[in-house]
Length: 330
Image 1 (cartoon, rainbow, N blue to C red):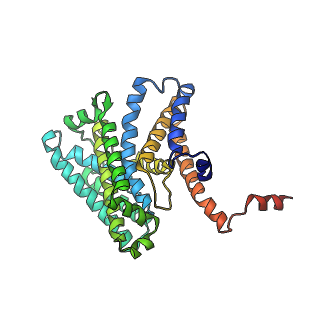
Image 2: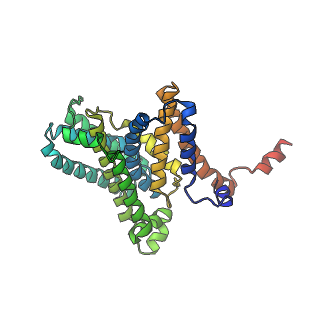
Image 3: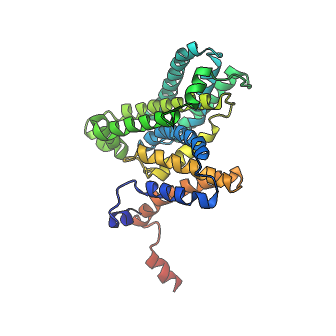
């Protein structure tokens, strides 16, 4: 794929932009009305929220990790911003402060387990997700009936200059992250640590500090996504975050960020989130069950891993070349 892109002189991470454009072109032929104004306005907020959550997953994957605490953090956030204010918008700032503290605590626990205790990211974040789920059940006693405040609901549902507020927040978040990663020393060191931690240590970079901070920043993006989920849904359930684990990983894979760490693009990931959300709308419009979307997401992740690891296996001699297979067949 990289060889084809270089031959066509296409920019890096351009594949998802092309695929998304093609999806929007063929969407009306697959599901009529999928590009109508009402359809787009109902789809874009979900794409924006997924894009925000996927920023955190992108940062973690760039550091050679994988964050499975996404559902727990988003769900806990929705519970905090609906139950603590208890319908009073004046208490929202305090609720946001609690969300920030919860995100920092979650990220620090994951980061310490990974950087100091040597726990693999998969196991560490899975354990943190279980802890977050336990906190949710403790707070709610297994029944979530609180609704978001009117102020939060109005913000999440309203539009500015015809653009959903959730989309504006997502664009700002993507732009800020892109600038930091590409135009600052901090961002370049972050990418260097993800690409080669050993070289980063030799260069005097505090690798473990970068890795730990990544999980804190990722948790904060999940918190922002959770706040918007609470406002948009009004009365989120105890499974409000469950629909964001596989899609965040799939969006990162679609965006072209390597699962082996290093260079990535939060902008391409955001476009991947848009692709997934529009695809879900088209699949639903065609009358396919929700399980079809899960199959598609799983296939995208599997394909991304295959694209990443098959060339490596071939170089190391663990995968036979095409010529070898032809000789064996003859």
